[in-house]
Image (cartoon, rainbow, N blue to C red):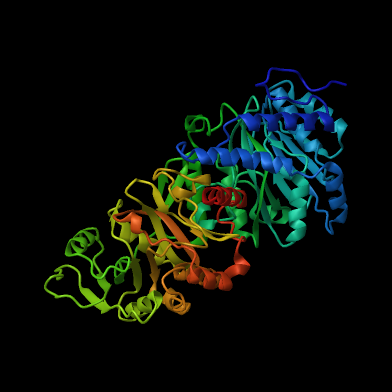
Length: 598
């Protein structure tokens, strides 16, 4: 009986035989590599050194907290339902040692209720069939079909699917790895939410030598971001009946998983996320993560997949290609609606005529009115504008800021309301159209963009409701940072958005009773966002409204005061339940904030 192969410290340790101890030793070796490898979040700017440290610590911390085998077995016995997982694995010419590692990682599962369904896609490599025959003898749960002709990944996946008898299917590539506790974690999650149809986990990236080169710490499911790119990835587990209902994979497309995931999620009742790294994705030399040139048709195929999805769901619009294999759906804008721009600038008594001139120059949309909250009505000649009507509303200091905003809304005419609390310069000339593109969607609540300061860093670009309250997660990130799972350059939803520069339709705002006038000057926008969420609306962040603030030092920051006390009383039950940012990343950010305040 052979033990683990010996190699230098940069080699990935593999197991030649089915042995729990050898596989666990391999994982320990990887863990040691994590501690000395720069472990970064995919897409984050390299200038943010704290992001590197956080991700390394997150990975190490998660592995150190894994239950031992006996504890897991005890918990398995305590599960009320033991779903059977059919692991779908199309195989074509994997490197011998890498393939053995992958198979061992499946056989090492502590959770026993699984089957491995493999379709050998007419692999010409001589080692593939003997390895499969050997492993079939080792474990009867391996089901293998050898295809006489190459059918591609989608065709081979469908062939493997024909072997499946489990309640759920899980997807594992022929050169990747899953941890011994992976299927247990998925089974436990399903027991906690029996109605779930689609479950995905966090994942990490290793190169062919086993070096950790990245990780995907994903948010909870976000439909708008998924229409930009397939960030869900592996490990993904779907109810077998759902996959059968949508007809399995579409053969002949390189965007095979994106296509299947879209069709399944369109029909799924519940999509759920396990906030743990349970899958190692191998960065093979032919991977698109190494070079987009490795799979030149991927962008075209995934665009076709997205076009088909738009047809099924009757989504109007056109698709624009972005970098990083991403897309933007350009939705039509109804340009007959009036936009009422309601301006209150950091409690300054009166904006300058220079500000209004520059403000108007950035508006290309034809139907706009400007309503300015002021302490006293100025000389109308001083602020007269030929192109846009201006209305001044006296700010009532006996009332709260949200009460004054509600009054301004009542005096406005627009179907769409744009709130401006900060002088700015837009980096997109069509910023107002980009706002309207989302605000005019009937399912959308508040829409906000990316706000930058004069240091070209982010002031805000979406927030999360952490266990300690609202958390400005991207504050001081570089303007060109892309964020985990490319969230900073994707259209996506958040529970919380800043109301400093934001748009909402009048109909939607009135449907939730306007702004809560109990708040004095802070947190009323977050309160609005949560009430919109509870009503079923989605609050959207759009990177295509990127605005440079003129006076970022006076940015409308939310600090703890009486408004925070009231906000906490209203929404404490939701603190720490917002998965718009991965929970592990939230904890890392809170830890950094805590250390800074010491």
